[in-house]
Structure formats: C-alpha cells, structure tokens
Image (cartoon, rainbow, N blue to C red; front, top):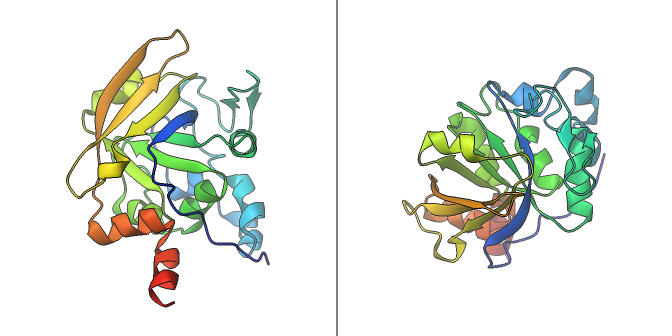
Length: 216
C-alpha cells in the first residue's frame, strides 16, 4: 500500500512547453492504458501500477507497443519511463489519442496513472464517456479535436501549449499550439465538455481536493 499525497492544484497559468508523450494509433482501451492481469496486485500502490501506463498503446510514429521517443535524449524507451523523465525534469506531458479513447471497463487507474506521472492533457478525436469523466475527477484536462483532421498535424517531436485556461468556461473551446522541431507551428481549437463544477475539480487539482476544501 502507498500513502498518497493530494495532486497539485492548478497554478492559474496556461499549459505551455508540454512534451508529446505518445500519439496513440487506433483503438486504445482502458486495458491498453492500464493493463489488468498481474498488474492488479499493485492496485494499492499507485506509483508501482503506473509502470503499466499505456504500455499496450500503439505508437503512431513507429507502430510499436511501449516504445516512444524521449525528446530529452532522442532515444526510444517505454512509455512510463518517458513520462517519468519529463516529470522528473519538471516538464508536463500530453497524450494524443484516436477515436473512442478509453473504451472498455471503468478503470480508475487508467486516469490516475497519467496524473501521477505528470500527464496534464489527454487530447483525442473522441472519448469513451466514463473515461473522460474519470480524467476530470483526477483534475486532468480531457480535450477533443474540434476538427478531427487536426490529429494528423501532431508530430513526434512536438512541444505543445494549451491556451485559454484563464478563461476556462463551459462550452468555450481552448486553443492548442503545436511547436514543431523545424520551428514551424500549427494552431487549432479543442473542445471540452466540462461543466462549472468539473472546472472547479480541475482548478482544485481533483474532485477529492475540492471536497476536502469544502469540508474544511
């Protein structure tokens, strides 16, 4: 068992300088995001079970499982290792996904593990509803491409910003800026389904954080 500390609250700033962790290709279920089987022995230890995060997802850029480019070194390493490298360097990361991302069983660890390893945003063509809600509960930013074709603009070495968080309100899209390795940029809109209460979860760092604040 691992004693958990509360996740950090939002610092009031836009998300800038995030590294692309993985651009998942095709089907990415909760079992791809957080495998079951022998991993379930670690259900009570978030950091240990986080070592299975997205190890079943297919990397768009090389069609390999659990092999992504660490932008800090240029080497290909397991997904959790890359997330830890960015997190240890104080750099946020972002996961990009395809259609119906997070389908399958309602597995809370599929949202808790990315949060634990410093993933700030999950940007997809579409979400499975329950997984999207689980991400919201953990204080993460779950976004969908306003134009699904913008998925194709995401490149392997991208550094990514999400702009507009200071005016984060229901129904108002946010802006995503892709900074490509060649110095060029792409900018597009991303939608969200956060209501007023869920935005407060985001600002507090998680739904549990907000509940704790309200009960003080």
